[in-house]
Image 1: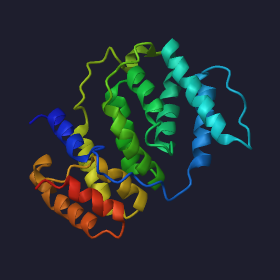
Image 2 (image 1 turned 30 degrees about the vertical axis):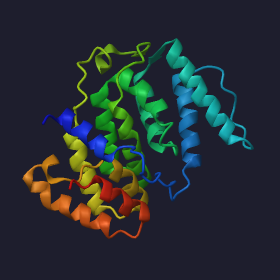
Image 3 (image 1 turned 180 degrees about the horizontal axis):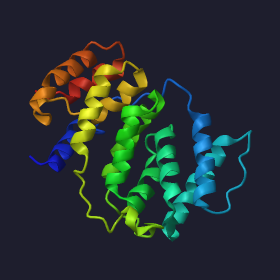
Image 4 (image 1 turned 180 degrees about the vertical axis):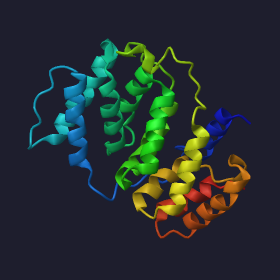
Length: 238
């Protein structure tokens, strides 16, 4: 089985399947850091006439920035190298696991899948716990097809649609990093966010990681959090 097939199989088993409990909200309030990320998106990408944030209505400003970025992607957007970091940071800090694709997708199209995934793996390995959880949420969207043909990098050498696209790139590296993080890191948000995209059968890993797979399953089955206990039973191969 190829790495791409492994990823597809993992999504079948660990993706959003009917009957799964919804991913709970984060245990830490990340709204303020995310709003700072949005301000960086506006400043660096210069996505148009977005008003100054209203201290009394931050959520509306959030929606305005997202709408302006979507419009810019449709119309055509050339991204500087500095834009890569602000997009990844916004994706990682976005409190909404459905809308964070709005930052992942332009980064994928402009800078390529390998660079996006490398950045997410780095945050999973070395970031704060908030960033580790956010990287796991953002990773799901890193498998999107490259459909924003009007979104390009200012420097063509940074990759993007012209780069040979391989959806299996760095998948095994992510699986190993995520498995190790799930076992070693007791932070509730990290474990909740890592688990849905984590294969929990031995054949997905080399023999030297099989004991870690067993440890992850045991941790999840005995975990006090209902969501984690619920998810693991759907993800363990019978």
